[in-house]
Image (cartoon, rainbow, N blue to C red):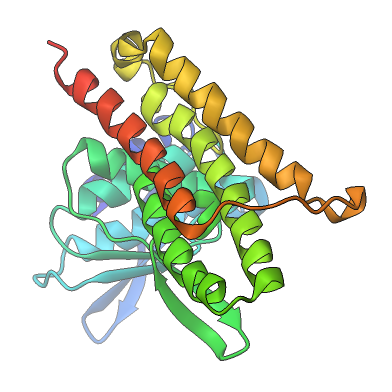
Length: 287
């Protein structure tokens, strides 16, 4: 147990958290263990370690105990890290992804940086992952939807949602609901504009830089070299079109111009999809 615990704590916190696990009695053949500081065994651990360090210790102790079990049952973690654990977040994500090779890991979290860490590390290892969102709405709590919330979804998920929204908007258009259609179309173009922005991060910049991530991933830097002038022009032209449409219908400006029909909206969404796929194809062709 002691060796296993030391192995786990080093993987999670390197040499920065100097603690050990020792036996502290037991009952009916079941031993008890406690964590103590190397430097001052009598000190109360929770009075010395930060919240993030305590997270590492707790996870190390849990995984140590788990190593003695013969089963490979799924593990469920509820907010395993917080904003106070930012120094240890990446190591915790790395360890959970590693453990997912042996068993199913389910993580509930509000921390999108942690989600990105889990997703990036899992993708690098080629591990199967599924992202779902839980929300509260008029129908009640615990509403489950595929993928991440819109603001955190990837470009493919966003394009799929935009296409579905455009098809729903057609019903308003066909029913001559001008106000409803206009409001829906403007919202679609607002989200399309945001998806072009995400396309820069996920596709054009190949994830080298990313919002909600506190590091630059240079391993894909070469993929950025495939960007051509035509790609830039397509981006600028369509991003401007989205911006112009959204700003033209800003209520604070008291303007109310025409919005494109459903077929044009779908065509504009396809331009983004084709732009992204073209860049990805060239990136994948790199040697």
